[in-house]
Length: 242
Ligand SMILES: [Zn+2]
Image (cartoon, rainbow, N blue to C red; front, top):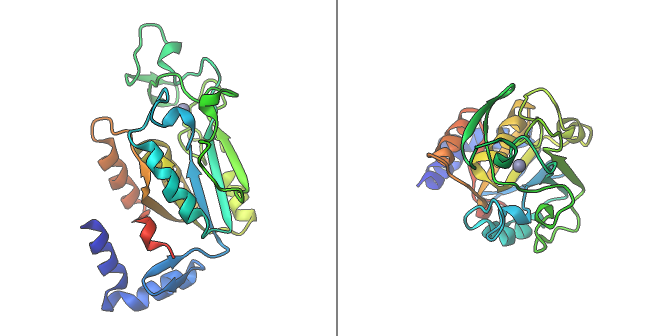
């Protein structure tokens, strides 16, 4: 339903001229009603790591189902960036680091509220490895995040203190990339925060819904889509990409 509304809005009679000018401005070509990623576009593959797959310590439901979708659309991109959650062994985001706390409880830290997670993606462990079925040999950059012991980082751009930068915005700028397509795990945390920070960095941002899966704590998936829409993040399906 949302998909149809979006297409009508983008490609309805009144919208054609606008869509053309918008797409022209962001360096995109439009083939029929498909979006064709150009040289100024990058695919961002967020945290498709063993810990987040079924059987992992912080498994996202059906998380493995994003893999064939991401492998397929990656072929349409010259530029692919992957992210890797990469924590110290007693990271501040782990419930086990805090006496008497359980996973999914929320605590206050100097930089704000922090959801506590089961131990996951510890540096150098098999759980932190990118899923073996991800097949994107032409990926150019892996951004590791969450490696500072006392700060979490859902976003590929900005750590949870909202100050410490990963360098990704500058990298994309130097490479003259102005448009990103965000995929991976999990929709309501690392994907959403990455997409929103990409918007805040001045990029055009698409989130490919069927190339993502979420965790959903108290309606957090719906809330994430709402927050992303408010910032101008566009929600598409992999079939929208040429
Ligand atoms: Zn993490």
